[in-house]
Amino acid sequence: MAVLKIALMGHPILRRAAEPVADPTDPEIRKLADDMRETLEDIGANGLAAPQVHVSKRVVVYRVAPHQIPPGAAMKPIPWRTLVNPVVTPRTEEKKPIWERCLSVPALHGQVPRFTKVRVSAKQTDGSDLTIDATGFHAMLLQHEIDHLDGILYPMRMTDLSTLAFNSELGDRGFFVPRSPEEFMD
Ligand code: ZN
Image 1 (cartoon, protein in one colour):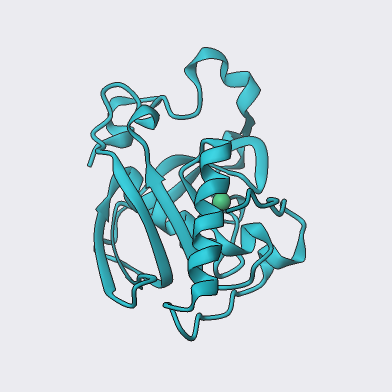
Image 2 (cartoon, rainbow, N blue to C red):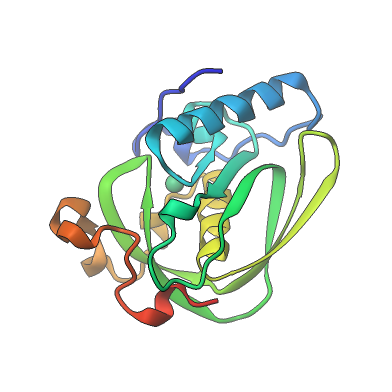
């Protein structure tokens, strides 16, 4: 496995729609997913889309580790998942602003309106189908990562640019600490 280099905002690969994967069981896709996981472990982050490691394919890897769940947040840990050719469908019309950051937009965070409930359908690397019904933070994470496959970075979804801020200005609160109790509620 290998730790991969992250493409930063401004790199053209991040603005391009990624190619569908013809064969989700292709060993190259599994290797890509393994390397993406190792990269996330190295950085200590939750999710990564293949264009962020300079590969224009519709592959997302994510997890939510127990230590990344803020105190009081209604979230459960999510084990590693690899999504190949994922499709996201909102299960509500309701959107709520949620704080996001992105490995391709370092040092910043901002508030993005996201659907609070989504369904994601995808293939896994063993060829099986996966359907995920997600809410709250999990739903945001999936919308964020799948946006990468369509060349969209979270600042392009922001409706209130006054919330765009440097992480260093948060002090001890850190990115994952909710500003209000309902922020991470399912
Ligand atoms: Zn991102």
